[in-house]
Image (cartoon, rainbow, N blue to C red; front, side, top):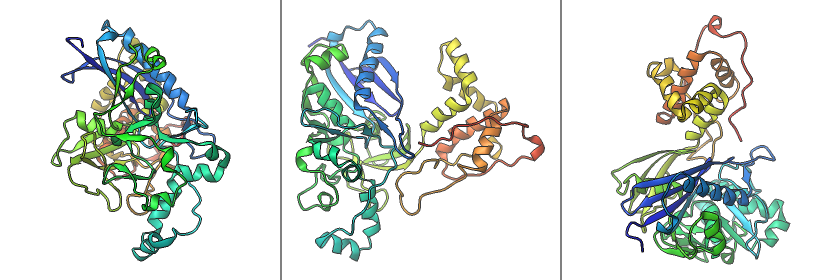
Length: 428
């Protein structure tokens, strides 16, 4: 082993893939980043991406990493992978994708065919949980595929999360981390293993135990780099691949949020607040805590569905000028957005952003509906025509992560510009 060993961490997020080199003290030594298209949508509400697209761009991120540093690849002694959560992939008996991956942002719903049968059905009816269980069945991607693409489901031999797919591409083994299991799968969130044979989840989805990968705890070995994978990453073959956890779980670990009294704020595509606990504590009734990157621990989480995604949307729709200036200066556009924020007072003169443009699961109760269409979209279009109003909106986008309420900015009609540009709605 080298005297100064390094770990290569692959982070496959929703909007980019990063290849990161860390030393044994946790210091970042070098990085490569490849932006990706989060998804394509062939139908309203769908969000899909080709599995091979993730694999190819993982290689590009590694290429950028090695181009950015003079560190020798033979200093790397291990590889680990963290990914976005809840993205599922169907593979055939040879490990080849049968269809595009269904991304966690997807909003299609499966059909619910009658109540759950047997004792579980009686229990759900007695405890008035039928609607909750039906929402689980509707959101389960495997149900939709089996109902609408039965020929695909019949050929499916492996049903894995994105983390499981990438670990398979790296090692040739169907193994994944317990810390990555977040999604509509027959997973026991309390015991961190696949659900027992008597669990109702096996009854309400077509997934079989043989389709699922072997699970190991974070920090355990998943296998070793194959020759093909080593060439793809620019590394020596045979290096160990170590189980990590989901992207959020790794963020919490990296920020030092290892006890219940420390809250970890995360501004990824979604915005979350998490705390780590040895006890199984549901943050919202019937919403389980997710597996922690710390083995045997739980991550209690409350989420706002749109987090940094809104900043990316704002940059794409309103930030062309800042992107051009940033490219000339060799800086990130967000640096210029921070300058805009400083140009207006706190509160953005009353303009606040409702972060429910594309709501997800109900946690709990009715799906929130705010001023994200109609007048609000008209307002956003109008604001974009005046540079100083762009500053108000910038502060509003950033400030929304601290508030779930929404308020409209009211200005006299005489103050609106005469024309407003077309704006792409921020939805899937």
